[in-house]
Amino acid sequence: MIRKIMTACMAGLLLLTAPLQAQESPEDTESLEPVPYSEDEFPQWAKDLRRAEIITFGALPFVTAGATVGYSTFQYLSGSRDSFPNPFDKNNGYSTGEIVGIVGASLGVSATVGLTDFIISYVQRKKAERQQALQEAEDRENVRPISPEEAGELLRKNQRDEQ
Image (cartoon, rainbow, N blue to C red; front, side):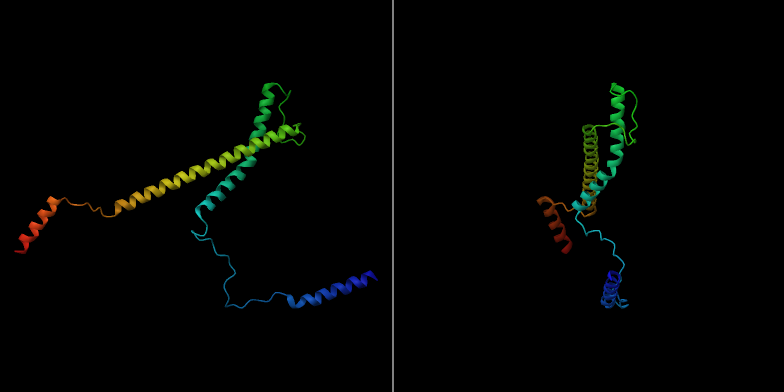
């Protein structure tokens, strides 16, 4: 009985959704290809923030591995452990506090790496903008004011040329 009801429900759903099937779009519509971002689509601060985010989270696994190996080395050299622990072992014997410390240090170092990249990129961009502004200023003609004596000489010369 339940099987017949389920079959009837499925058949009803199929019949109801049949008119909703996707149709082929006319050829004169716009292309469905995505358009690449234009250069000025996002403000510079958003691009810088995105780059810093990518650098920060991209560095996190490597920094975490380095922090774990560094912490293990410190424990081994200070005599807290009898043997060097394998940082990639699932049962490495780290306490919850040690794990929190390792992850916290990793987050701090990764954020520092991202912030450092952000600052370096910002300084380089501002330097390039300043150099471009100086180059544009040099390319323009330099107009310097003339002194009253030079103006008088030019007037006398023009008057002589007219006579």
